[in-house]
Image 1: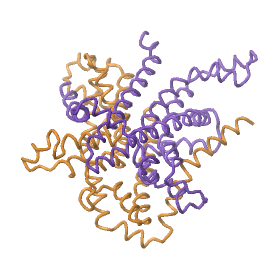
Image 2: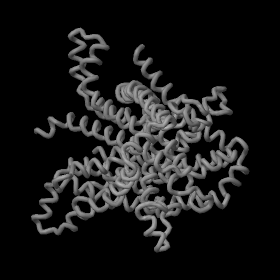
Image 3: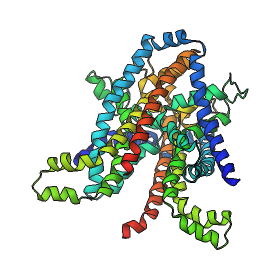
Image 4: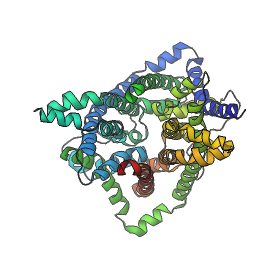
Length: 262
Length: 254
């Protein structure tokens, strides 16, 4: 009897908070038929917003993947003083509001900011342009690869690496032939999480982008723009495209996870 | 090694320094005046209040959900397990929009919670749903069921078994999940911005306060509240680190 009570609570919780609302979005997007949906989605500014989101993601993900792997290796393999601090700093973006991240970059690269005048004198636009949006996205998606690789490296131990080393392999060879193959699923998992975070980033990008339609507007900002301008179909339309990407990400996560466990 | 520290310094530490410097450059007194202004206090109070409610709900409902996922076995558990991570994968703005679709002005259920504080709590529940479930689930999965059986055969009731055997084991998981959820709730903006209406003194959370004050050019106000949020984040990271330190104590000794 109690078993069913708990089951009912869990199912009710997921339905009211998660699945119910989500299914409504699909209904809302298709409610007024395919034509208005298509008009909103093929709007040049919307296409530009999707392109910009993909561009930012295409820069931020590789940067954070390389950084994440190197950072994890440094934390686990080199027991240097201050490893704990590095570990804590890497975790910070998980606990910090994206808006605060945006504000920090605003203060750094804005007109009156520390580096604002320097870049302005050299004619480089950072704030309200792609560079600041890329930096913001890198900041908020920083921890994911490192977070996934650190425990895997720890469990792996360094015996194989030492063996390779004794057999005369160089540092690079050891990394490519021994370390990377053993952590590859953790890396892939981290990359999937990073990608999801980059595509969906809102708060930090909202602050540093300036929200200029057709120029610095990403897909998530476009959702808000459409909604506030009473184009509900457009808003829900972009939302389902983003939701569809999330479902793909989720599928990738479920497929990769068991492999990682074995 | 040098690469890691340089990268972290440029990407993370430098921006933090800029924020702390800006908020402190007019002195402690000015900082205090700005942060204790009624609108800022209202925003911070609302944010912390909502975060406390959401964390408490998460602790209970997240644990129940994890329990059902591990111990119960019915047709829906696999599907449930797969959708738990959806809020992680879904953009926050889309999360907020989904809630509007069901609980907004044209709700098919006839409940309109848009522009209320309830909407904020609901949005935060949506975004923080996976945290406790995903920290408790693995612990529950590895928990040795023999000690529970032993307790039962010695005559302990279900409540007693849960309180003296299961709970002490999963408590660290619950705590770190709650701390993560709390941190997320304090900083959340994307899922809230469409549904809350962002009315100062009523439904303006701290993150939206910071955003609005940047837009209106009030850098001091934005920075002061942002520093408070930064401090809360540091505190929560300390809590999470502390829990991790205590639970891995035995492993590190071995």
